[in-house]
Length: 301
Image 1 (cartoon, one colour):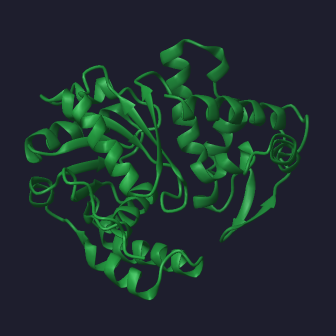
Image 2 (image 1 turned 180 degrees about the vertical axis):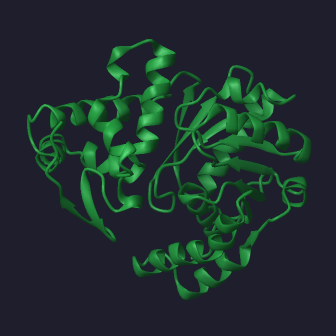
Image 3 (image 1 turned 30 degrees about the vertical axis):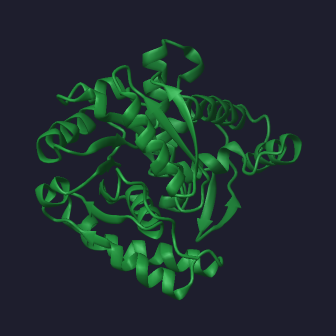
Protein backbone atom coordinates (compact mmCIF):
# COMPACT_ATOMS: atom_id res chain seq x y z
CA UNK A 1 0.00 0.00 0.00
CA UNK A 2 1.47 3.41 -0.93
CA UNK A 3 2.11 5.86 1.93
CA UNK A 4 -0.55 8.53 2.55
CA UNK A 5 -0.17 12.01 1.13
CA UNK A 6 2.08 14.04 3.48
CA UNK A 7 0.37 16.91 5.35
CA UNK A 8 0.31 20.14 3.37
CA UNK A 9 2.59 22.13 5.67
CA UNK A 10 5.30 19.47 5.98
CA UNK A 11 6.52 17.68 2.87
CA UNK A 12 10.32 18.01 2.98
CA UNK A 13 12.18 16.87 6.09
CA UNK A 14 15.81 17.38 7.07
CA UNK A 15 17.30 15.16 9.79
CA UNK A 16 20.42 16.58 11.45
CA UNK A 17 22.45 13.75 12.94
CA UNK A 18 23.28 10.47 11.22
CA UNK A 19 23.62 8.27 14.30
CA UNK A 20 21.30 5.42 15.22
CA UNK A 21 18.27 7.64 15.86
CA UNK A 22 18.90 10.01 12.98
CA UNK A 23 19.14 7.17 10.47
CA UNK A 24 16.01 5.59 11.90
CA UNK A 25 14.03 8.83 11.76
CA UNK A 26 15.16 9.49 8.19
CA UNK A 27 14.19 5.95 7.17
CA UNK A 28 10.77 6.35 8.75
CA UNK A 29 10.10 9.68 7.04
CA UNK A 30 11.17 8.38 3.62
CA UNK A 31 9.11 5.21 4.03
CA UNK A 32 6.00 7.30 4.61
CA UNK A 33 6.34 9.50 1.54
CA UNK A 34 8.37 12.48 2.77
CA UNK A 35 11.28 13.84 0.74
CA UNK A 36 14.06 13.36 3.28
CA UNK A 37 17.59 14.74 3.60
CA UNK A 38 20.07 13.71 6.28
CA UNK A 39 23.07 15.75 7.41
CA UNK A 40 25.91 15.17 9.84
CA UNK A 41 29.07 17.25 10.30
CA UNK A 42 31.12 14.05 10.68
CA UNK A 43 31.92 12.81 7.15
CA UNK A 44 32.23 9.14 8.12
CA UNK A 45 28.78 9.16 9.74
CA UNK A 46 27.27 10.78 6.65
CA UNK A 47 29.00 8.38 4.26
CA UNK A 48 27.66 5.34 6.10
CA UNK A 49 24.10 6.69 6.37
CA UNK A 50 22.69 5.52 2.98
CA UNK A 51 23.80 1.92 3.51
CA UNK A 52 22.50 1.90 7.08
CA UNK A 53 19.14 3.33 6.02
CA UNK A 54 18.85 0.81 3.16
CA UNK A 55 19.52 -1.96 5.68
CA UNK A 56 16.64 -0.69 7.82
CA UNK A 57 14.34 -0.89 4.80
CA UNK A 58 15.49 -4.45 4.12
CA UNK A 59 14.71 -5.43 7.72
CA UNK A 60 11.25 -3.91 7.35
CA UNK A 61 10.76 -5.88 4.14
CA UNK A 62 11.83 -9.09 5.89
CA UNK A 63 9.14 -8.43 8.53
CA UNK A 64 6.54 -8.02 5.79
CA UNK A 65 6.19 -4.27 6.42
CA UNK A 66 7.57 -3.15 3.03
CA UNK A 67 7.60 -4.58 -0.49
CA UNK A 68 10.45 -4.41 -3.02
CA UNK A 69 8.66 -1.47 -4.63
CA UNK A 70 8.26 0.28 -1.28
CA UNK A 71 11.98 -0.09 -0.61
CA UNK A 72 12.98 1.29 -4.02
CA UNK A 73 10.65 4.28 -3.62
CA UNK A 74 11.84 5.01 -0.08
CA UNK A 75 15.52 4.80 -1.04
CA UNK A 76 14.85 7.29 -3.84
CA UNK A 77 13.36 9.76 -1.36
CA UNK A 78 16.50 9.91 0.81
CA UNK A 79 19.44 12.13 -0.02
CA UNK A 80 22.66 12.81 1.84
CA UNK A 81 23.20 16.52 2.48
CA UNK A 82 26.84 17.42 2.90
CA UNK A 83 25.89 21.10 2.66
CA UNK A 84 23.62 22.03 5.58
CA UNK A 85 22.59 25.35 4.03
CA UNK A 86 21.26 23.73 0.87
CA UNK A 87 19.16 21.12 2.69
CA UNK A 88 17.96 23.42 5.47
CA UNK A 89 16.87 26.15 3.11
CA UNK A 90 14.32 23.91 1.40
CA UNK A 91 13.09 22.02 4.48
CA UNK A 92 9.60 22.37 5.93
CA UNK A 93 10.67 20.55 9.09
CA UNK A 94 14.09 19.94 10.61
CA UNK A 95 14.45 17.13 13.14
CA UNK A 96 17.63 17.39 15.20
CA UNK A 97 18.98 14.03 16.41
CA UNK A 98 22.32 15.04 17.90
CA UNK A 99 23.88 13.79 21.17
CA UNK A 100 21.96 14.59 24.37
CA UNK A 101 23.84 17.78 25.22
CA UNK A 102 22.21 21.18 25.64
CA UNK A 103 25.40 22.89 24.41
CA UNK A 104 25.49 20.82 21.22
CA UNK A 105 21.79 21.15 20.51
CA UNK A 106 21.75 24.89 21.20
CA UNK A 107 24.60 25.41 18.74
CA UNK A 108 22.72 23.41 16.08
CA UNK A 109 19.48 25.35 16.63
CA UNK A 110 21.30 28.66 16.46
CA UNK A 111 22.68 27.66 13.08
CA UNK A 112 19.35 26.27 11.88
CA UNK A 113 17.65 29.52 12.85
CA UNK A 114 19.80 31.21 10.20
CA UNK A 115 19.85 28.47 7.59
CA UNK A 116 16.25 27.17 7.75
CA UNK A 117 14.19 30.36 8.02
CA UNK A 118 10.87 28.83 6.97
CA UNK A 119 11.08 25.49 8.78
CA UNK A 120 9.59 24.16 11.98
CA UNK A 121 12.55 23.17 14.17
CA UNK A 122 12.09 19.93 16.11
CA UNK A 123 14.39 18.25 18.61
CA UNK A 124 14.48 14.53 19.27
CA UNK A 125 15.74 15.20 22.80
CA UNK A 126 14.48 12.74 25.40
CA UNK A 127 15.10 14.93 28.45
CA UNK A 128 16.42 18.43 27.72
CA UNK A 129 14.33 21.59 28.01
CA UNK A 130 12.68 22.62 24.76
CA UNK A 131 12.43 26.15 26.13
CA UNK A 132 16.20 26.31 26.62
CA UNK A 133 16.87 24.83 23.17
CA UNK A 134 14.42 27.31 21.62
CA UNK A 135 16.26 30.11 23.40
CA UNK A 136 19.09 29.66 20.90
CA UNK A 137 16.73 30.85 18.14
CA UNK A 138 14.79 34.00 17.36
CA UNK A 139 11.53 32.08 16.80
CA UNK A 140 10.74 29.92 19.82
CA UNK A 141 7.12 29.65 18.68
CA UNK A 142 8.33 27.38 15.84
CA UNK A 143 10.43 25.09 18.06
CA UNK A 144 9.00 21.83 19.44
CA UNK A 145 10.12 18.51 20.85
CA UNK A 146 9.55 15.49 18.61
CA UNK A 147 10.74 12.54 20.67
CA UNK A 148 10.95 9.30 18.68
CA UNK A 149 11.66 5.89 20.18
CA UNK A 150 14.21 3.35 19.03
CA UNK A 151 13.78 1.83 16.48
CA UNK A 152 11.68 4.60 14.90
CA UNK A 153 10.38 2.40 12.08
CA UNK A 154 8.85 -0.08 14.54
CA UNK A 155 7.96 1.85 17.69
CA UNK A 156 4.39 3.20 17.61
CA UNK A 157 4.74 6.31 19.81
CA UNK A 158 6.08 9.84 19.30
CA UNK A 159 6.12 12.29 22.21
CA UNK A 160 5.37 15.90 21.21
CA UNK A 161 6.88 18.30 23.73
CA UNK A 162 5.36 21.77 23.84
CA UNK A 163 7.78 24.48 24.91
CA UNK A 164 6.67 27.55 26.89
CA UNK A 165 6.43 29.61 23.69
CA UNK A 166 5.59 26.91 21.09
CA UNK A 167 2.47 28.07 19.27
CA UNK A 168 -0.65 26.03 18.51
CA UNK A 169 -0.09 26.05 14.74
CA UNK A 170 3.32 24.41 15.19
CA UNK A 171 1.85 21.73 17.46
CA UNK A 172 -0.99 21.06 15.02
CA UNK A 173 1.41 20.71 12.08
CA UNK A 174 3.67 18.30 13.99
CA UNK A 175 0.69 16.27 15.20
CA UNK A 176 -0.45 15.90 11.56
CA UNK A 177 3.12 14.96 10.57
CA UNK A 178 3.30 12.25 13.24
CA UNK A 179 -0.08 10.91 12.12
CA UNK A 180 1.17 10.75 8.53
CA UNK A 181 4.11 8.67 9.78
CA UNK A 182 1.56 6.14 11.02
CA UNK A 183 2.45 6.85 14.65
CA UNK A 184 0.45 7.68 17.75
CA UNK A 185 1.35 10.92 19.52
CA UNK A 186 1.04 12.19 23.05
CA UNK A 187 1.42 15.85 23.97
CA UNK A 188 3.34 16.84 27.09
CA UNK A 189 4.42 20.07 28.74
CA UNK A 190 8.10 20.99 28.69
CA UNK A 191 9.38 19.60 32.00
CA UNK A 192 12.48 17.57 32.93
CA UNK A 193 12.28 14.12 31.35
CA UNK A 194 8.85 14.87 29.87
CA UNK A 195 6.57 11.84 30.48
CA UNK A 196 8.24 8.84 28.90
CA UNK A 197 11.87 9.43 29.90
CA UNK A 198 10.98 10.37 33.45
CA UNK A 199 8.93 7.20 33.97
CA UNK A 200 11.25 4.95 31.97
CA UNK A 201 14.41 6.18 33.66
CA UNK A 202 12.89 5.87 37.14
CA UNK A 203 12.03 2.22 36.49
CA UNK A 204 15.35 1.51 34.76
CA UNK A 205 17.45 3.04 37.54
CA UNK A 206 15.64 1.06 40.22
CA UNK A 207 16.17 -2.13 38.19
CA UNK A 208 19.91 -1.32 37.95
CA UNK A 209 20.06 -0.78 41.73
CA UNK A 210 18.43 -4.19 42.23
CA UNK A 211 21.14 -5.80 40.08
CA UNK A 212 23.77 -3.81 41.98
CA UNK A 213 22.40 -5.05 45.33
CA UNK A 214 22.16 -8.67 44.15
CA UNK A 215 18.37 -8.78 44.53
CA UNK A 216 17.96 -10.72 41.27
CA UNK A 217 19.61 -11.17 37.89
CA UNK A 218 18.94 -8.74 35.05
CA UNK A 219 17.08 -11.45 33.14
CA UNK A 220 14.84 -12.28 36.11
CA UNK A 221 14.11 -8.61 36.84
CA UNK A 222 13.14 -8.11 33.22
CA UNK A 223 11.00 -11.23 33.22
CA UNK A 224 9.23 -10.02 36.36
CA UNK A 225 8.05 -6.90 34.54
CA UNK A 226 7.20 -8.75 31.33
CA UNK A 227 5.26 -11.66 32.84
CA UNK A 228 4.07 -9.92 36.00
CA UNK A 229 3.09 -6.51 34.62
CA UNK A 230 2.62 -7.12 30.91
CA UNK A 231 5.56 -4.98 29.74
CA UNK A 232 6.62 -5.86 26.20
CA UNK A 233 10.27 -5.62 27.28
CA UNK A 234 11.92 -5.43 30.69
CA UNK A 235 13.67 -2.26 31.93
CA UNK A 236 17.23 -3.60 31.65
CA UNK A 237 16.92 -4.90 28.12
CA UNK A 238 15.27 -1.58 27.26
CA UNK A 239 18.25 0.22 28.81
CA UNK A 240 20.56 -1.83 26.58
CA UNK A 241 18.58 -0.79 23.49
CA UNK A 242 18.41 2.89 24.48
CA UNK A 243 22.11 2.88 25.39
CA UNK A 244 23.54 2.97 28.89
CA UNK A 245 25.38 6.18 28.05
CA UNK A 246 22.13 7.82 26.97
CA UNK A 247 20.37 6.62 30.13
CA UNK A 248 23.24 7.95 32.23
CA UNK A 249 23.06 11.39 30.60
CA UNK A 250 19.30 11.56 31.09
CA UNK A 251 19.55 10.45 34.73
CA UNK A 252 22.20 13.08 35.45
CA UNK A 253 20.06 15.77 33.81
CA UNK A 254 16.96 14.73 35.77
CA UNK A 255 18.85 14.58 39.07
CA UNK A 256 20.19 18.07 38.42
CA UNK A 257 16.97 19.65 37.13
CA UNK A 258 14.65 18.08 39.72
CA UNK A 259 17.14 18.07 42.63
CA UNK A 260 15.88 14.55 43.30
CA UNK A 261 17.94 11.63 44.62
CA UNK A 262 15.62 9.19 42.85
CA UNK A 263 17.45 9.98 39.64
CA UNK A 264 21.00 9.77 41.00
CA UNK A 265 22.76 7.27 38.68
CA UNK A 266 23.82 4.01 40.34
CA UNK A 267 27.55 3.34 40.44
CA UNK A 268 27.03 0.17 38.37
CA UNK A 269 25.64 2.27 35.53
CA UNK A 270 28.57 4.68 35.70
CA UNK A 271 31.06 1.82 35.75
CA UNK A 272 29.58 0.02 32.75
CA UNK A 273 29.56 3.24 30.70
CA UNK A 274 33.18 3.94 31.69
CA UNK A 275 34.08 0.41 30.51
CA UNK A 276 32.40 1.04 27.15
CA UNK A 277 29.63 -1.48 27.86
CA UNK A 278 26.87 0.78 26.64
CA UNK A 279 24.36 -1.83 25.49
CA UNK A 280 23.38 -3.36 22.18
CA UNK A 281 25.34 -0.88 20.05
CA UNK A 282 28.54 -1.91 21.89
CA UNK A 283 27.68 -5.62 21.96
CA UNK A 284 27.35 -5.69 25.75
CA UNK A 285 25.49 -3.96 28.57
CA UNK A 286 23.27 -5.87 30.94
CA UNK A 287 23.19 -8.53 28.19
CA UNK A 288 25.64 -9.72 25.55
CA UNK A 289 24.29 -9.06 22.08
CA UNK A 290 24.77 -11.00 18.86
CA UNK A 291 22.61 -9.22 16.31
CA UNK A 292 19.16 -9.09 17.89
CA UNK A 293 19.86 -11.99 20.22
CA UNK A 294 20.58 -11.14 23.85
CA UNK A 295 22.29 -13.49 26.33
CA UNK A 296 22.26 -12.77 30.08
CA UNK A 297 25.44 -11.53 31.77
CA UNK A 298 26.16 -12.06 35.46
CA UNK A 299 26.31 -8.60 37.01
CA UNK A 300 26.79 -7.42 40.59
CA UNK A 301 27.68 -4.06 42.04
